[in-house]
Length: 444
Image 1 (cartoon, helix red, strand yellow):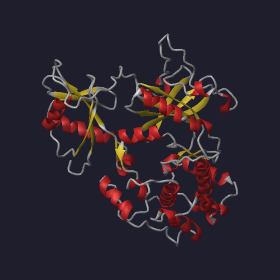
Image 2: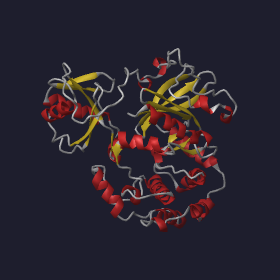
Image 3: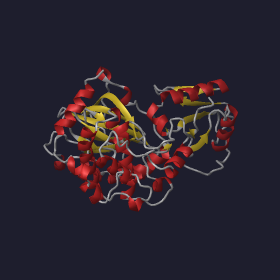
Image 4: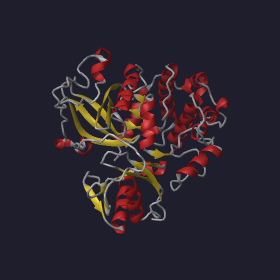
């Protein structure tokens, strides 16, 4: 285990005190150390074991050093190659096994909201076994369906119904798991009354009901967005600290699976990416997470941005829950400085470079890098230029001027829109995009 990276162990207390996050190096921490830490934060008798959940949601008991190593191995086995490469390591949640509760006071004097019993995860069901989630049975609640998708236009919904906190109805049926991203699992679902397909992302967030309400309120921004280049948002709801975000389904998936993309196609895609960004910037909102996996395409040639970080509370909650380094972040953002549109331009430049070449624009970055080394590389290393013998001078210039270290010297929003490379591809020819997507989807 010498090559395994550090990650966070989250000790979950089910007796009324807060969880504790602990950054560990798996080849250095011992089983006894974990027990000792648990004994200081959990008000109980002697702790001799702990549990974790496997990929099926079953509790596995750990009673020895060897079983702990098996737990670490399972943790890394379940992690996607992309998350490992990007340095995105979700916390490994463990549950102390204790006997009688002692009268010892919690030394941290912390409190938390105790969660109710965990429901089945619909994302682990697919096809004929897909689960239909039921409406809460509390008779005192008079809840409405998450959304009435049979209406002709999404602005005809009542936003209070669309964003009904805690609402799940029989109208939504999960069909299959299709991917992961931003700390959440994405599934294809169907709204049964209308027959419309949706993408449903479920993110686990350990937050209070007050923060849940604030996130739902802030997500109303997405509902109000009306742009050809932004994914349609249909609603969001919470259930037991899981937020489900329902959006338009794009059958082509995300751009990260199409790299490298020919310049002729990528140029037209870039027009729609910039169109979506300009729309949000004009509303004084930042995307905050521009990268290939957050650009979706359809077999009809549509290109749309998704996973906008317009909800500051949602961004904070994801950042707390999932610790890692985003290789698309601008240097000033990594260093904790204030950031705005220039940081978005940097992320756009990194995204274009990777979409065109299949590689990141940093010479020394490798998949084995630890997060701290990765941050140093982005902050201090000069980004590479696109190969001039492969790409047009205009494209090389656009990416190069987006990846200038000094934020004040990067392309402005107006300069992006008016750049010769972008203007050259504003012909509205989505057939080029559609044919490319079709050709790649047909390959085995």
